[in-house]
Image (cartoon, rainbow over all chains, first blue to last red; front, side):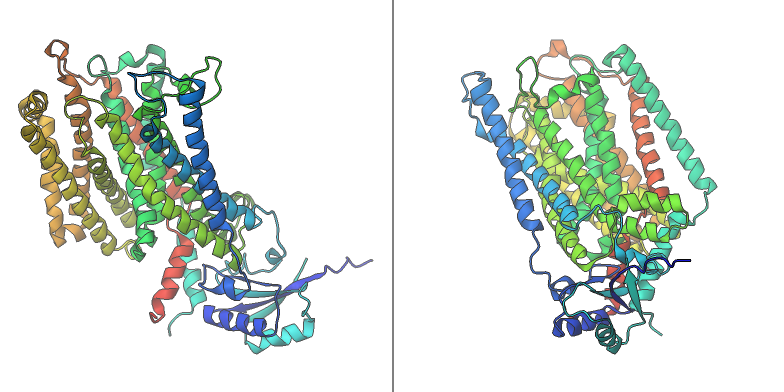
Amino acid sequence: MKSPVQPSLYGLVAEFVEPKDLLAAVNEARNASYSHMDAYTPYPVEGLAEKLGMRSNAVPLITLLCGIAGGTIAYGMQYYSAVIDYPLNVGGRPLHSWPAFVPILFELTILGAAIGAVFSMIFLNGLPRLHHPIFETPFFTARNASRFYLCIEACDPQFDESKTRALLEKQSPAIIWEVRS
Amino acid sequence: MESSAAEKCDEISNRISGLVLREPLRRGWLGGFALAFAFLMLLNAAILWLLIRGVGVWGVNVPVAWGFAIVNFVWWVGIGHAGTFISAILLLLHQQWRTSINRFTEAMTIFAVACAGLFPLLHLGRPWVFYFLLPYPDTMDLWPQWRSPLVWDVFAVTTYLIVSLLFWFIGLMPDLAVMRDHAKRLWVRRLYGIGALGWRNSARHWNRHETACLLLAGLATPLVLSVHSVVSLDFSVAIVPGWHSTIFPPYFVAGAIFSGFAMVLTLLIPVRAIYGLRDVITERHLDNAAKVMLSTGLIVALGYATEHWMSWYSDDLYEGFLVHNRMAGAASGVWWLVMICNVGVAQALWFRRVRTSPVLLFITACLIQVGMWSERYLIVITSLERDFLPSSWADFHATFWDWATLAGSMGLFFTLLFLFIRLLPMIAIHEMRKETVQEGEPQP
């Protein structure tokens, strides 16, 4: 009988029980100039993403742009309808009665920005996503993902199975797991 | 030995997800759900009858055209505000104690706003043409009247509902992933998995997630203050005595948070007792919530004082008569109820004994909710009953269907709340994990 094709190696995952051990391991891997790696933690650990080499976070900028877009649409809509498309003289008051346009301008600015913040977060994270190699590990189901994981990915130019394993082992993790996909 | 960070995280997620995944279907929950559902059916009947016969089934008529629908609307929107206050404003102020109650109160916000949204729509008379309120390219070439606070209201409440839902959902996403990982049955795992959108706890994802949460908190803070301000403009832009007042926006916002925290306590006190969460939702939470209630209650009392003083100081015949009519007229019972509950009973919160005693606090919170509903009744109804022209004066009498719709909306609220408790993690797991692990660490 033919054996099934061995799936290719995605990376090596080291498991830690304390966040500070994970941070130390990330530092060590950075010093060894690894760049393709990710950490998986049960809650947001401060400064971890920056240590992993995440430089920019586009969420605030997109939020700002969406907020400006929402506000522009709101004001443009009100101005166009009240002044250009359907001018209605109410007691001789100005058609461009800007103070009355402020509440909707404000609300739609907030709405635009909120939608921008949420959806930019989701899409920049590459979600929704049906599967990811990290789910091949038993960490999510058997351990409820309540520990701290560092994954050095095989696509890293520095990656060498035995050397990388040795580097991770020096950090005395609870376990090292080969992820295949 | 001190337990490790991983053990703490595991314990928290086991416990909170266990409330949903391992807890058997209890008789108490079933009974409560059945009762709430019965009231929801009453709401259905009331709406059906309304659609068949029109708004005449309510007690509304000229001059009191606003009736219960607007009273209930303002009351429910106000209740929602406490949830946003806890999840947004207290997050920005680094109030860590909010962590264990914010998920629950955000859910409360969404359900309360859903109840609130029903009333103006039903009050339209022809709810099926509600889209006339929105700007859309219609065949009549008409636009909404941008200078009307009622149109502002449509935008404010819709925005509020959408932003609250988004805020709630992104907070839930990582917790739905925890539920997915804890669930044993495949279809349950799949359902939670769909909600989690494939969340995998990646550090980069957490980074963007935290940014988005913080930005939403920053956006929701002015939003929540604006929503009840816009609601109050529905009144204060009109010239009716008792409505036409510049104090309305801050006074309404304070009242909203006051009644909202009363609802928070009414819900949390039984929940923490029934689900054995006394160590998660502690006396400190009750105490803090009671303090917020006390301070906003004092602002509301100041609002009442200013209103009454202004009616005398303005030397306006109609304003003066209005206050006299409220205090000694046909509806004076409501005035006294408002004063006793919102100004009198609220002073009990000065005492630590009351703030830390669940039973006393529960009773106080319930009385304050009655008081705040009555306050909105007082504002909406007594002002309209006696406006400028004595020949058009008339008294408002609530009908059975008015009360049925109010009770039914509570049925809707509690049905949603019972389902939420049963189906979703009612405490934010990842935030609790972070807080519990960091508690043990020395502060920098």
